[in-house]
Length: 344
Image (cartoon, rainbow, N blue to C red):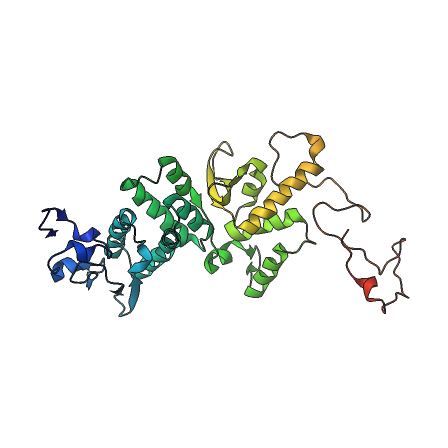
């Protein structure tokens, strides 16, 4: 604790900010106020003798290793925000392991970097969400929003916070991908096989509906029953937040009714585009059914000949066969245009 002489105001050293600490304090902070005790019982120094956060904190572990925590990732230069992130940083350092703190730092930096560039709090959170790389990034952003609400940051409303806190993502971690992208008999796909599956997502000659199902399975590991329960109305595009997500039905054993509980799953822009294209195609192909709330995945009842435009995928003419579907043995290989794919 320290006292500013001209105002006699008590300052909580835990929440002092780098940008204000030197101007606020008149005396050096004693070591006991500059250090904390981690959850493993180690005492580490986190602030300098002026009360400002050290730019780099060495977090030691039981196995003899050390992690470098860069505190600048938590700060924006705006006192109202930094007062909160400073308290959050102190909380993390005393309760979590170094690796977890690093994960939080990476996620929170997605937000703080946007504020530093001049964006408001709400806009910065929206932008940060669109740049998440894995589950830990979103977890950090959600925790940050919880602290903003607890500290009553005026730029965050309860409704906005609720929307953010409901979001979830499957992430791209290898362990997660291995668990849910596997063959029932042969086990998880190899790296090469996963590479082929990812290429298939961008292949316009594969049925659009197949690519949507593949994307949902690879990203979220959805069960077949969840995919079959999805409706077109479950796809939500939030222009104000700059994201799209799916309301995925939660399926529990013994649950008497379906589509009563949902989890919001944030979509990658590429997956969101695939789903929008699929919905648009369905609305044209199945317009005569006049469904009020059609499924996202529809049973294929329409047959499309080679002569008509296939609405779900790109097609090409096979010049190796004639109109009677007989193989043309004297095909002219000298004409490079004759064997090119013609999109119809």
